Image 1 (tube, rainbow, N blue to C red):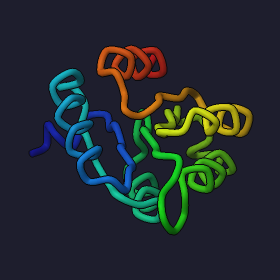
Image 2: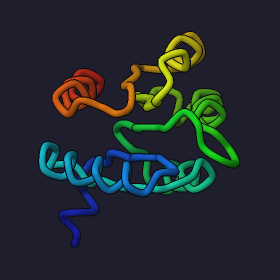
Image 3: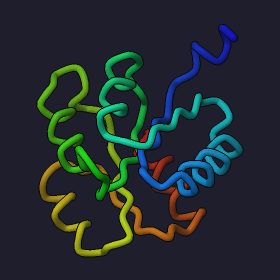
Image 4: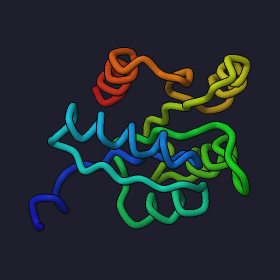
Length: 126
């Protein structure tokens, strides 16, 4: 258990349970030196970031309650979290421009292409 706790973290935030499970399976296989943590809403994401600062966040743009854009705003305002790379995921290409202008490290359109997603994550982890 201690080994798992010492691993760097990739946080996945999406209100779609199927997306969460697919992303988790793909990332656990590709990034086995990371702990993959999932949550289905922005409020929980903020709590998880406070508890354990992730190396990178995959964040869905549109979610009920607090959406991905607001989560990003909150994280970018705090000194402790402003430098965490955030990759937005969205099924709507018009979201990309708004996100990148405001606070994003990168953007992956849903449905995602696995190779593209992995390349994007590796690029942002460097």
